[in-house]
Length: 308
Image (cartoon, rainbow, N blue to C red; front, top):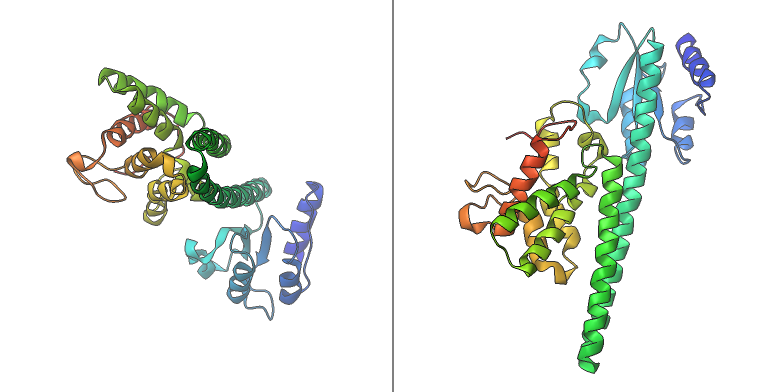
């Protein structure tokens, strides 16, 4: 069709790699390969577009899909965001907007793939940690001194690993970049004013470094969204304290840190999350991180603002 020819010409002029499917089945077969973006023309003869959309998402739930429609296809413009369509492009094309949308979608897809690899890597390291904990338990019977040395080494290794993963997340999210570092600074000032003990300060520093690790499980399109979040997106973001605690759970030596990570968005009046704790039910460390985190959020530039 002339519209498809135009899209092909645009892609070739921008040196994008493109594969054109002659029919729906061929397109599904192509998806066995590695594609950053799927362009789907609405209303092709003999093609159930929405049915094909569902089949694409069954093959790859992270697929980035642009739906191409004619101006007179008014009804399709009401397709909900939950349908899996990244964006709807109408003909005649605004070429610059089209190219920007394609480039943005490709970047998000690549970021999601990278994020998935990070999560898998963390899961593998957690499995390895569990094996190491079994080994430590056996060696405890053999030598208390040896156990202490292994424990310290294991703690240091896994703390470096997890912090490296946090830094990897922060380099992809323009808001969270250096966020943990700034929260640590503010929390240290608060803790100093409260004359906390050295051990409490160490726990607080580790908790600040790791408080947002649960965002590994939050989609980049939500973390980097420009403008207000939808209610559904906001509920997804609110899962990150519990996700963070779950990720750190195998690290039994971080028990106090894990508690702070889970509670750092609880509020004194009981309106926080995930457990709606209030007052003294919330640990002192979590209350300190909450204040430091809120102050840093209010004084930094970010893509969206947390709803109350």
